[in-house]
Amino acid sequence: MHCGKYIKSQTVKLCIVVLHIDGIRSPLASRCYSHAKVETDEEFDARWVTYFSKPDIDAWELKKGMNTLIGYDLVPEPKILDSALRACRRLNDLASAIRILEAVKDKSGPHKDIYPYLIQELQPTLIELGISTPEDLGMDKL
Amino acid sequence: MLATRALSLVGKRAISTSICVRGGHGVAKVDDYNPLPDVQFVTELSAVQKSLKEKEKGSWATLSNEEKIALYRISFKQSFAEMNEGTKEWKSVIAGMFFFIGMTGLVVLWQRKFVYGPVPPTFESEWKEKEVQRMLDMRINPVEGFSAKWDYENKEWKK
Image (cartoon, rainbow over all chains, first blue to last red; front, top):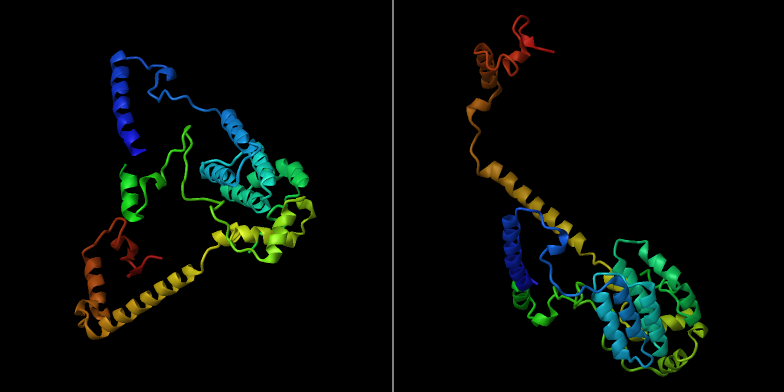
């Protein structure tokens, strides 16, 4: 990240010089951002739903996927979690399903309204698959 | 680059597991927080646990709450609540602070008695009275300050 910072600041300095020479405020489109394609939220969600939807997903892939997803600076959408919970079902792994729910609650941090929303959205799936929430099991208390 | 080099000195970690890893597609990523560990907690299953694992292959709705908790405990050592529980260390820290402040207080008292000499004569009340009188006679700060508060007619402090 710091390497990128050095390179970027050079280009930024160059662009600022160019802007001043022009004497006009260039429009937003010509700002010196990277030209890499930015993935939209929908593409991100779809990619992860597809990942967990793999019919013959194995335990390692489930763990790897979840750990990576939880490592991101976001709380996954209900549809991604739904796909992950179904993957747990295919793998006969109830413990991981409960763990996933705990993890997203933890991920929400101080935003206490995210987790109830997720549970509300996932309720049909939880009932269908017979997954109890950590709260049902009393695991959210010590 | 600086951050990763500092981390490799402190934690002896490979640079690939540094905390500031970019997760691709512009999303920030952390490598050390793994809710689903590689190895399950209980490796040797008892007969009860094995039969429970078999039952897990069927419908989960048929499992009781105790069975679900038992399945969880096979895979994971601690729940999130247990993992995130704070220690009671802060009490020791505060106690230590008070102790050392107290010790310092004792040292200060001892110093006052045995180290410092007497205070100058200018602190005696008789001296101070004469000092105040002198200041009033000199009209120190007569507009808004010291002497302004003295009532020269009635020879007392203004109310």
